[in-house]
Image (cartoon, one colour):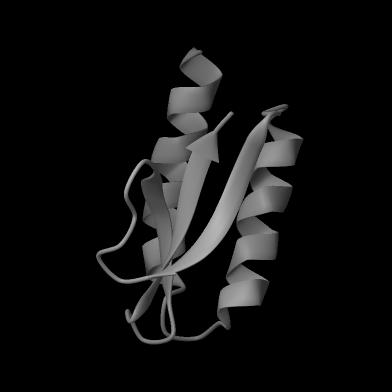
Length: 74
């Protein structure tokens, strides 16, 4: 559980740093690769419009902040 919390925390910081320069699909793929490398399983990442991340945690932003990458466990 500690690894999961650490991974999500680090991804939150990393995701926002790359928000302007990457496409949503590219950023989503990078976040998934980092989660997989940390051994996280049973999750989904979705691209959603800003502010519509109900039921998940925002772990990245893209398209100049108009879209968000949402992490959901399950």
